[in-house]
Every structure is written in structure tokens, then in C-alpha cells.
Amino acid sequence: MNPDATQTLFNQYSAAVEMLAKRMLGEPFNFHRIQDRIRPEMLAPANYYWRDVINECAAQFERNGAYSAATVGASLNPSEIGVFHGYAMEHSEMDLVTAYTYFYDAYGRYSETQIMLHQVNWLLDGHSALEVLNKAESMRRDRGISAFVKASDGKSEFEAELLAAMDGRVFDYPVKPFLKSIRNKIPYYEPSEYIVLAMLSGGGKSYHALNQILYCALDGIPSTYINLENSPKNVQKRLWQMYSGQAFRRDFSHYRPDEMEKIKSDWEMIKSLPIRSINPGNAFSDVAGCIREERYERGIELAVVDYAQLMDIPSIRGARHEILARISAGFRALSLELNIPIMVLAQVKQEVMNRPDKRAGMYDIADAKNFTQDATTIILPYRPEYVQVMSREDGTPYEKGYADNFIAKGRETGRDASECRFNHILGFYDVPEPENDFPDFVNYGNRNEPEF
Image 1 (cartoon, one colour):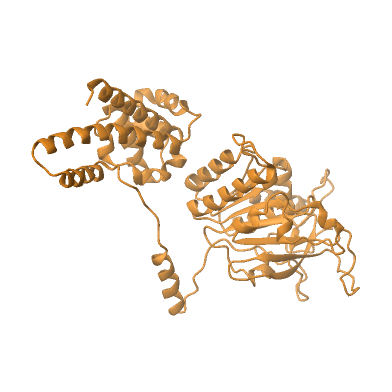
Image 2 (tube, rainbow, N blue to C red):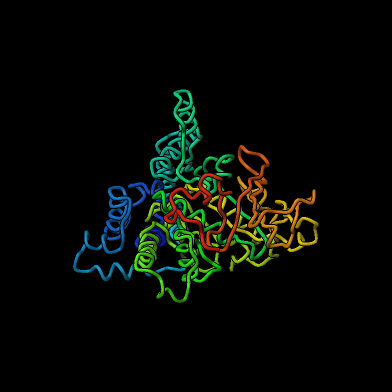
């Protein structure tokens, strides 16, 4: 083996270790993706300084489920915490998974030089070619450069659900549809579900998304609203209106003191809920990275993206439907990776306005037939008032505020529909029952008839 070549490969490996350490400091929210792939033997030849950084990140994540550049710096060298913050900003053009891939490749090539030296010595010692191959493969396994496979086969998860059913215990998940009429058909959204909710532009997709997030938050379920369309202030206004049951007015000064107190207490409740509305930009990589960070730093159980057609993959040039196909596939993979339901809103084609009932089907999702293939659940809300359809096919007029949700695709429901109502204060809500005559938001604060 050429000594210069060996040194070159070692230098490449050392540079890769340094880069990996710095990206670990910069992306603690992505560490879970490489956690099980870093083995101590991979770091044995590395400079002790960067090896200590990597090991400390791993140790803190193992203990606390999180770390930061500051906590790692404080542990290794409290007088240089600022230096660690600087490290975290370096190589930001490369994400942590890519940095690990680069490191793993450099480590593998350097390790192969060491294995080749051993192979020569084994041959000179009289070992057969087959013995040499077996010993070389054993050394590769010991050094952690054999194939890596880590995935659940689903047996333990299904066994837990099966045994619960046999014991008469209901196996439940925290994220449930906010409408009772949908819960009667879909009792919960399972972790790893990919839900597509599609509607005409301006039809109320954002209301549906915020209804869902608010319903979950009032049950203590943290969630993230990736808001690519609405202003942050408008998001907060809608949440407050949905909770309080009244419209925002520019002047509340004429209200009674008890009404003013209710206005303030409703807002304090909204502020306290585990909801974050974020606009990370329209690049898919930024949106996915934001959802990962929220999952591993806040423990969110639901992510909603509003909406798909506003997104892009800047590094790819191609037809719009091809880019959206990659975005859809990316969200499906992300829901499986993070093991949470992800709801993605989408627009349907304007051509549905040419139909008599102006209803959309699941193949009407604009520019993205792949959504229908990737999604586990597809819901198509419908508001006849919005599309100016006054009556059903049999001539019966629609009730005021009538709306429904067509489940065009479901894991276990098949195709089904559920009736509800809509207004611009509450968004979507269940048909009021005669005995109470208010929407079925069991946790919502205002139990009075909403202002319309």
C-alpha cells in the first residue's frame, strides 16, 4: 500500500470527523437519524478533540433526549462556549445526515486500507483465499462498515394492539379528528399516517387545519402548523375566534366588564396552548427540517402543512407535477420516520367548477396525482354555499352553513361522507344537536350560541 495514499485517506477521514462533529452541534434535532449508526470503533483513529465532541453529543442525547452547542461546550470546556456556537454555524450548507454519509464513506475507505494490509499479511502467513475473505469480512463487521439495517417488522406493535383487543381494552391514539361526524368513521389518526385534505382555493382549508390543531391542543396534544399562506396575526385571530365563539371587532370598548374579562381570558388560553405556527419558507427541505426539529424538541404529535402547492424543491428542475410528486413522497417518508400523523393541505383543480355539483374527487388534486397514491387518508371538504350550489340533485335546498367531508380514501373506512356545518368564526363544526344547539367542540370555551 502506498504510504502517501494511506495518509491522504486518513486526512480525508479526519476532515470528515471534524465536519460531522460540527454538524452534530448545529443540528441536534436531527441527531436521532444517525444515533444508532455511530459506533465507538469508527472514532478510534480520530483526533481526540472531535471524538470527545461527538461522544458528548451522543451521551447528552442518550441521557436527556436533547443537547445543544451550549450544553456540550459547557461540559467539555466551559470557558469556550462561544467557540462551540461558532462550530455549530459551520458547514451549514450540508445537513447532518449528508455529513454522516460523507464521514461513513471516508471512514470506510480508510478502513479498507488497513484491512488490505492485514490481507497481505494473512496471505503471507499461509491462509487460503477463502479464509482471507472471511477474516476481512469479519474485520469489516468489527469496524462497523458492513451493511446497516434498522427497521421494525411491525410484529411487536401489532401484537400489543392484538392483545389489547383480546383483553377488551381499546387501543387508542392521541390525534383524533375534530369533528364527531368524522370520528364516527375514523376514530383516530394513527402515528405515521399521511393525510391529504384537498379543497378549492378559498374554500376553508386553513380553517379545517386550525380546527384540527386547536382541538388537539385543548386535549394537551402539542402540534405544529406550517403556515405558508396566512399572516401569523391572522392565524392567532382565527384561533381566538374559534375558541371564543365570537368575531373579532375593532372596538370592544362598549362591552361589559365581564365580557371584556372573557375576551382576555380566552386569549390567555389560546396563548397557553401547545401550538406553534411557523413559516420556515417554501423549500421542502426547510419544512421537513422544521417538522423534525419540532418533533424532537417539543414532542409534537401532529404536523399540518398549509399547503402543498406553495412548496418547491429549489435544487430540482422539472415539470411542476414531478416536483410535487417528490414533495408528496417526502411527506409520506417523513410521517413514517417521525411516527406521527402529518396532514398536508392541497388545492383541487378549478375545472371542478364546470360540474353541476362542483364537487371534487381525489383525482382532482391539482398537479399532483401522486398525492392519491402516497396518502393513507384523503378528505375532501365541500361547501355548496361557497361554490354557489343552492340545492341537492333532488332539488332539496341545502341548510344554512351546510358542509360535508368526503373521505375519498381511508385506511379502514373506504369511501364515506360526513355532514357538518361551516361559518367564518368557528370554521367547520358538527351539526348542532336539538338539545344543546351548539357545535360539538366539547373542550371549547364558549358554550353560547356563536355570533354569526
